[in-house]
Length: 268
Image 1 (cartoon, one colour):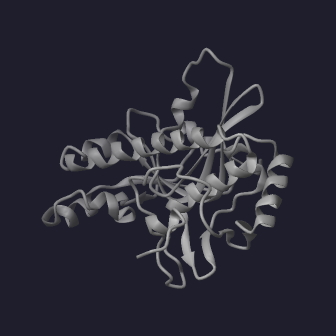
Image 2 (cartoon, helix red, strand yellow):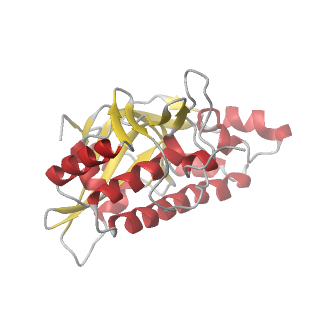
């Protein structure tokens, strides 16, 4: 699982969440937006790649949670060594301490950081700042709802009988948020190993490896240095458009992914 990171003493650095996340700032009226960007501050913590165990100590009072400013991580929930998982990244709102809530099932919860990650701690102090900017409450609740919608899509995907179809659907689903269009296909620039993919599609790693080989043979999914390259049409309609548009632009200026392109349809 990698190097263990125990952030029991998070750094005292601060950040401006609305500057880091312009989509949130857009909820504020333009005449008050600049002031809100400067006055809304929060503690910031950097989390290196590896297994993350220090998340329980970051939110020590009644706050909103952790806002991912940058990076990529996976949350796994297991029962009897079988796991469900979700992929999380920039703009997602987390509340990891809830993973320790009592349950009638023997649950295990762990977090794995796939890319260096920065989170803003939206604690009680930050919550008090919202009294001056109540417009932010709706967008923050929307971030939590976005996670639930994405999890529902993941549940639909893992109910598909064939693992190759699950993988194809999953990568298409991830392409809506993270994908970018190139002349030769759609790139999903995420460091998803076969082990990570096996958690996300609820399959054994050797089965995932075989299924990816089959998708490559069909010419619809290929591993590349940046991540994964998708061709052709998706295997079916698997999700609604998310609340948040993709934030990663193609560095070569080829544009963001449109809804038609994510669904395998030609742009008008």
